[in-house]
Length: 253
Image (cartoon, one colour):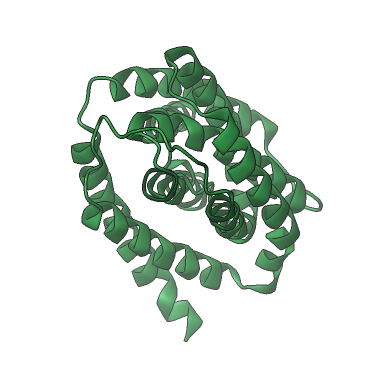
């Protein structure tokens, strides 16, 4: 019963993060599956892609109902990411588990620093007059590379890119990001799934709990200050990254 409650709580938290901020699912899921559930890093990456992809798709549906989703940007960004994510998925097999977790921690530090340093966009940011397709494609490909290798959906990279490069309002960037994460996660999952045993029951528990969390997060996003939420989450991400480095760097020596 305790294990079930733990998994339900983790699934709800992951869904809430995705619904509120358009990211953070994989940053939470991979370490949780490794350290709390006991999976290997490779299995955790594949399981994470399934969980985060399903929850992101549900979150995108909730944001679509609120009108905070740009399908054109999502499909261009996500298509570039899917191709690169699928092609790069096999690269994770070239690295040892400690090396994968160290790389994951370094990425988390960079993301945390970006969240803290990034200036709050204006709430009434205008819609882009002309879509910079080249920037959208290159940004999507870069996020897809990270998704394929590390199992990272990339929401905390996608949202700033959509706001700063494409010019979407923050709340629309969150909803759009969820579509991209779902697309990238599907491609990464297909690239990882061969030869990796999956715990379908565990995935189902996380997804069902994540459904409630994603709905709650999407509703809370309308009322809470996103700048404050990002800064608090950034501190958590950096603290978790430091723990991962402390635990895995000695294993590389």
